[in-house]
Length: 238
Image (cartoon, rainbow, N blue to C red; front, side):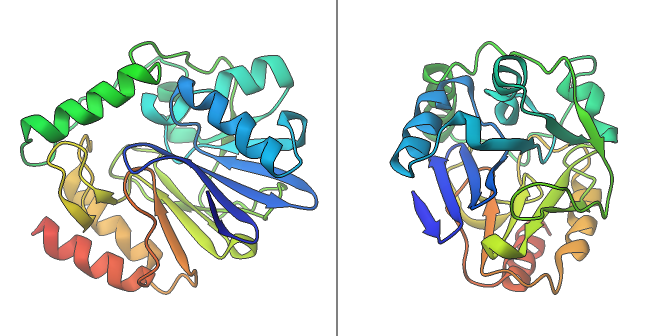
């Protein structure tokens, strides 16, 4: 799905993967689930590109539904995978989260999420064996010049990724626009969060970020203003 001149999305509102596409190549932000591989290669082919044009994968955090095909790209195609140092062990499968599920669930919504994840290979995770560690404020030498914004809370090494070239900030699970356990739509705190209070406090890091799109890892793309998304998320989290 094309969102902008340099911005594409694969997956759906349950689990999304984003591509920054420039003349210099492609940056992948999050790697979804293993079964998104076919969608990745199909989207690239439609753009006249291939996996060989991918210069890097940037993970917003190390949870399993964001690792997807990352190790496949690294192992088989030599694509470096970037993750905040505080989530490096998580992305390698050396530590496992004990998250807050985020205020309940509804059977139908939860079943849809788990069923989709199962169909896309989410029941078995291939963890990273090597990562490139990044830190808050780093601007990566990748297409779209993605800048790392530390957003601890969902996980210790959660980050947002801002790319002016794509006119987007990729929020990962710093917030969501579709709660996968309740089905509720609109900006709100994400479930499976390690420290919900810290996650809400970290939203301050996104205030005044200039981007037409705010793109969570789960939920519809948001183009109603970054500050408005923050306001709604804080209100929902009270």
